[in-house]
Amino acid sequence: MTKALNRNYYNDEKLSKDELLFFKKALEEKREKIEKNVKLTSNNVENGDKCHLKDEADQASNLIDTHTTNAIIKEQTKSLNQINRCLNKIATGRYGICNMCEETIDIERLKVKIFAEYCISCREIIEQQ
Ligand SMILES: [Zn+2]
Image (cartoon, rainbow, N blue to C red; front, side, top):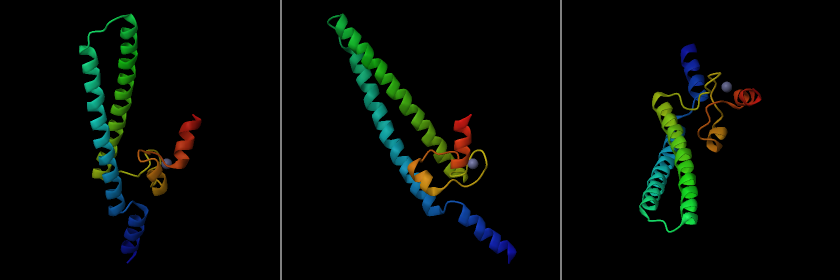
């Protein structure tokens, strides 16, 4: 009896299967979009490199474009890593659990910040440091 009660309590604390599925789907959609974007951006860079540039001004602007593009790709790769880490956590049942205090992260917080790895209290402590 006590065991059954504890188990229910435990389940209530953690994200439900449906909730996890919701986040899994959202993460996979995000990943798909970013992967498409990265492909498009990389293609643009390759095409840009193949162009014969007329003068120095063109070269300079192309350089800036490549620089910006690289920054975008870097940012997107970072997001992809975060998504993969979250998906991995969902698979292992660790998603939605604070990295620091092991408490369940509020679902409303996860909906806003899907990559959240810390609960609000721990996040505040980290930001103060
Ligand atoms: Zn915490």
